[in-house]
Length: 116
Length: 111
Image (tube, rainbow over all chains, first blue to last red):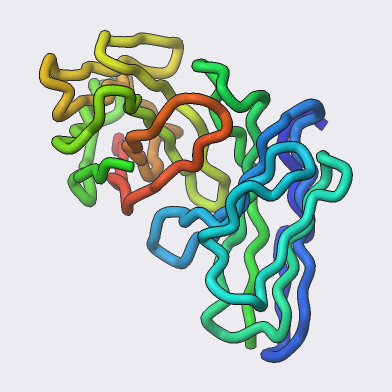
């Protein structure tokens, strides 16, 4: 596809359930980011990959959150033992390069996670 | 990353110019000003960015003050489809840098 694809678009999970959110970045994009957006707030950074290397995971809110990008393309954000405060939209973004001055981030439509 | 301050909301009549202000008084010399917008139920979309010179593209113009402490995003002829939350972000350039979003400005374009 031409853009960043995320699946599923919507996910309802029972409290305590594990979930996995998928991101297909634009082909060839080196950088991949995950953001969390609570209702009425701006997106907040979770973690960053450069190819398959996770270079920054400072935004992950707890050890229940885990992200991977094993082959440097598709990424999965996993949340274990979901809690109600995990309810949010999870956004994935990719960028072509790392240091290019004119590289903007392309965002997917997000996955809306509701924990009940 | 430097913090930005934006008004929470603005209204604009369709066909008129929308001028969205942003204060970034603590911006560093090597940080750029980026603008993204987020239409309801979609992911953020890049609009424009600049360092110190004014910039224009097919979507908008960016005016940065000489002291770089503030900027204005201009949508020259706003349409209903421009209704969105607009985020002003200061960041080092390059695709490897995370974006620090604030709460943005909700722009409502009306007939």
